[in-house]
Structures are given as C-alpha cells and as structure tokens.
Image (cartoon, rainbow, N blue to C red; front, side, top):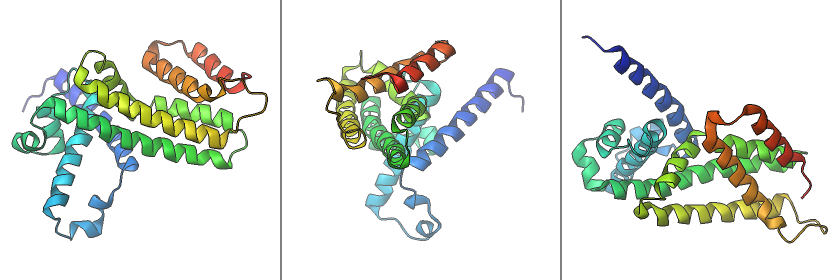
Length: 231
C-alpha cells in the first residue's frame, strides 16, 4: 500500500499530539473505568452511556488541540473515540451540542489541573515565583490550547458564549479564593489588590496565545517582572 509523504507526516503529527494530550487527559480525570478490576465488571446502562459520552468529549478536546476549532468535525471526533457515527449522533445530534458539552468537560479537566498545581504552593517558601511559573505552565498546556480555541470561537459563535462565560466565572472564583488563602492581604495593599491573580492569569493567557511569535526575551522579562514587582 502506497502512502503519500504528506499523509504520512500528518499521521505522525496527529499521533504525537494524540499521545501527549491523551496522557494529559488521563492524568486529569478519574481512571476508574480503565482499572483492571473494572474490566471484569459489567457496566450498567447508565455507566455505558456516561463512558460513551466521556470518550466523545475527550476526543472533541483532542480534536480542538490537534486540528483547531474550525477543523473539528463530529465525524472525526467519533473516529478518534473509536465509536460509530450513529453512536455520536445519538448522544450529540449536532456539533453545537457536542462542543457546548465539551466546554464544561474541559472546565473539569482544567479545574483538576489547576487545583493540583495550587496544592503544591502550600509547602514552598517563594510562593509568588512558583505560582507564576505554574500559571505559565498551565497557560502553555494542551488543555489551555483547547480552551483558547473555544474562547476565540465564542466571539462569533453565540451558542458557545454562555458556556465559556460560565467556565470563566467558575475558574475566576476558584483562583480568587486560592489567592486569598495563599497570599493574605497586607495592611499596605491597595484597593485593587484582589485583582492581581486575574491580571496575572490574563497576562499569561495572552502571552500563550501569541505562542512562538512572542519574543522569548520579552516573555522572560514579563514573567520576571510579575514575580518581583511591588503591588
């Protein structure tokens, strides 16, 4: 069988992204469905339904990471999930329904990731510097890539806007609460002290959006300034 070079390169690239993102997704969610013991137990109908939906939503996120929002199709999502087109249509008849559900699914994956990383800050001395590094790591992760695709799409696709706004609000609430616990407000703080975590998060997201086009030295200077500036 003859495989075109361009097709072969695309296959290798897709496989690489799939393996990296899959490992990330598996680290962020409950793996009970894949444990050795669970394979010996017959799933109930509700469990089968939940597992099928999860596979489709995981695949949708992988498509967003690898292919981008514009090139994500329901047929490819079903193929990546190892499911029939009919199964995909049964659970998510329209692309809009699939991606709206993917927004909420992505939130839970991102929330688990952020929560795990925030948990590391309790035992370090220079919390501020470590917190900046962790936020930068999160902003450049595969889940953030999928999130950026959905955020940009929500500008013109109104069906996504409400879901994306809701996730933004929930994540902001968690970040604010974590900031208050880890960085108690000093007596000399300004009235806008509580805005610091959101400002830092938005800066990291914006720089990550620029990606490889942003000057590396400028990025390093901005991150250093965030770690050392007096607020």
